[in-house]
Length: 586
Image (cartoon, rainbow, N blue to C red; front, side, top):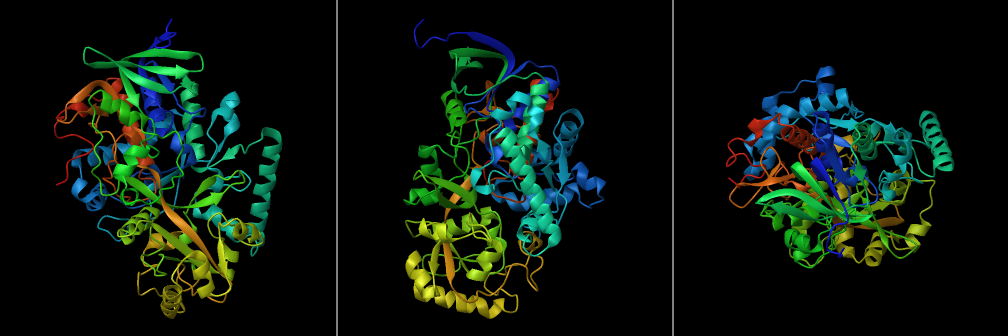
């Protein structure tokens, strides 16, 4: 047999290419309703970007909010989505998401091992019409991955840079507060000691932490649910191309450990390959800071190289770059490793803390540092639009870094010297020395700190209104008064940390209808081909309204696509011309 020929054949109803939240939610739903499903995954682990994520879902009207008596309404959620998505507001898609999201949550909690807990997250723009201060975000419940049995080894580990000796922190603010208060509160110290002792025990017994939280817990729970339904998840099995017969996608070629083979799919092939965050050619066209010669540093899995987008395009699907923000921006810093490579640290927490400011190379502030990661990333791109490099520097004093840490550098009593020596942190006895060492404008930085401190001593930020919204305050320091986000920068020495733009996944993606059917340039579906997850263009239109706006729609539309494949949602395919998940700008 020649190398180009498959070594074996298999057949199923649905072939899912990718084992993240999009692929697994679709597979579980289809299998639950009687279809024969096979999942193939390029990486040697399952979980995809989900396993690196915060594990939060944004679902207006979710069952946990209703149970808690939180007041919200469909109309408010629709107004908020209309305001947030702007020119890309797609009413049919938004209605499907808002109306069916709570149903999706109920299905997974009732029928599978997936469980959620409520959070206190405000919407990211709670002052926008329809925004709320609490209730729309839910979090995957922690999970003991020993429940996966021998498949525990195939779960993608959490992002190394956001763990402490491999131990995960919960995405909830309450959990993190104990770690920040460990040196000041006996209760927090005992909490942290218990967590550390249990984690060390797990490392000795299993060589990894088994009590997982956040996105790792969601990925594990989805995988457990799929495996319980006897859905095979073939890792180290990349898809190399789709098979088309008489104008219909009928399967794919995959290259597993036993060689290349064909998997035929009677109902459809589902692309769930994680988007194009590491597709160098595509992101150079899509990201403005790359087009002008800057650097992008993404923490998402390296396997997210746009395989789904390329396969869709090869059979007539479209992957336009239209959103103002083609990805969910995340400011990241480059953590030096001993082998000379760098790990990506996503700045999810430090920017909110009082006494930490962000400046450009000219030493000037340019945005509210306590806005969401996406908003700060977008502000970085805009502020540096006339420059080759897109970067910001976080700046603070000794007392502040000792209290909160800075990026990958942990709070006291953890030492900082190693981070200064390896170049991760820059240190200066004075602000002028810090600026010179970091390559910043000394005059600009000194003047910025002087102006900032004038308001900060009163807990005010006249320049950017830091601490104004409930979201600004949510991840700040509630013990710091009067403004949990604002404190003056005091005496030296001082520290600076350089941040680049990264992402949490692509927003632009394959065009589909509500059923998830891949569509061509004129809106007609490509028979037999579907897309979910980050492969599918986001219903958010390139904006980031709240915690979990990636995973919430991903699981909701995965659920709907699975039901459509099982023949339960024929109306999702009606009025195809108007019902696409990526409407043209108004």
